[in-house]
Amino acid sequence: MTLVANEQALPLTRRGSGRGWLVALALTAALVLAPIVAIAVIAFEPSSAVWHHLITTVLPRAVATTAWLMLGVGLMTGIIGVGTAWLVTMCRFPGRRFFDWALLVPLAVPTYIVAYAYVDILNYTGPVQSAIRAIFGFHTSRDYWFPEIRSLPGAVFVMGLVLYPYVYLTARASFLMQSACVLDVSRTLGAGPLRLFFRVALPMARPAIAVGVSLALMECLNDIGAVEFFGVKTLTFSVYDTWLNRGSLAGAAQIACAMLVVVFALLWIERHSRRNQRFHLTSTRYRALPGYRLTPGWSALAIVACALPVLLGFVMPALLLSDFASRRLESLSAPGFLSAATNSLILATVAAVITVGLGIVIAYAQRVRRSPLLQAAARLAAIGYAVPGTILAVGILVPLAALDNAIDGLARETFGFATGLLLTGSGAALVYAYSTRFLAASYGTIEAGFAKVSPHIDMAARTLGRTSVKTLLQIDLPIIRPVLLSAALLVFVDCMKELPATILLRPFNFETLSTTVYAAASHEVFEDAALPALTIVLVGLIPVLLLARTSGASYRTNATARVQA
Image (cartoon, rainbow, N blue to C red; front, side, top):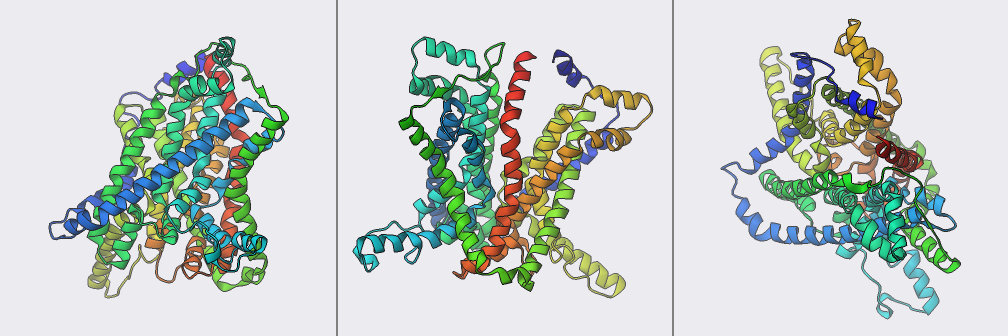
């Protein structure tokens, strides 16, 4: 292990080599930052007089609503994620191995689909209220009280059920990597299960939990489908409403700037917390964590605690979708569904290929030439994952529309014909938004793959006369081919589920699976969107199941390697 650590510290190139990779990385970072810069330029144009109106009327309510939503989602995801992670990691009860991976399954369902499903489940004519009226003999809604799902608490409930796996993943990883010796010492000193959790394990896992909560809140801030459907006027909804319904692009950009402040605050918390994760391993040896074998009574409670998030976050929405879809199987051959599925497939595939290519550029540039400048450029290139889709849409549409007009004007003057909207009218803007937003997922996966390839292999190839490009194409990429496929799959699924950017940047009369679901829910005919929604869920299950299959073993392997180094 010491040899590997020293290998990773060795430079692959010397003196001026690798400048081409530095330029490529700089261009990638510039493409990612361009929408953010465009937003700032639009927001602070001197001709705009909307800011005073926004800051006195729209922003205070939107900021307060967003803060309450994020607070509720943060608490709910933290409680569910940390609690279930501790149960499956430290406790022994029937079904623990099943729940170890099943608790990740809600990640496969986008928040807006779960929101649409729960409105059907909990509304007056839904199965829950119908059962209440049948059991207690009520006749109208005036005879009993039932909470309104289309509300801020409803949005917290739905988002918490979908986003808690982010916290579950990071908390479980932290618990798995904690030293068994520390927990043994705590037990020797008389610490019971609860005291061990609150006084030892939880403080040690605090950085990982903060990372998971930050990721969940970023996804919460990105959502537009659920909050609009529930009537919760967050900052994201305000951007959408100000731009499309009020016709003020400058106002939307100004609200987007306020959102960026929140995003960068969350990003700082995540980076700061991740930096402090080093103290988890405090022993020079690693072994299996000591578990608590629960009594039958406590085992029943643990099963209920682990089953409820899976049941509410995945099983119930999936059953509803399956029921609706089974009644509309004829839609499989309908032109609208086939067209939306084809558009989603093409866009997601193109974006995945581009994103993996850019991820290779970023990861390999750092491998070829290491410097603080490269590290900074790589971080900037990967910042897109923290920027909500609505913000990207505002920042992308204006520059691309201006470029479209310039190309069209040049074609008219030079060749005498109009080119039309080549970029914004062809879906290129959507591919740009997808690639920018999900580049971090691709880069992180590919960087981890390169880390497992010894730099000495590259050095040997360079000594034999191969250039850095040939070394990459002929040696490194074939070795990490499975990693590249995993990165492409992750990006592909994220693109299939993405809604905010798709709504705002899609060409006229251009539908995807996500916009089809959104349009049907907006017209209160969610049954018509059950088939495309179920398709999105089934596609999303693939990477989640792969992640669930490999994550636990990889965390244990990494922990063992780190303590032996």
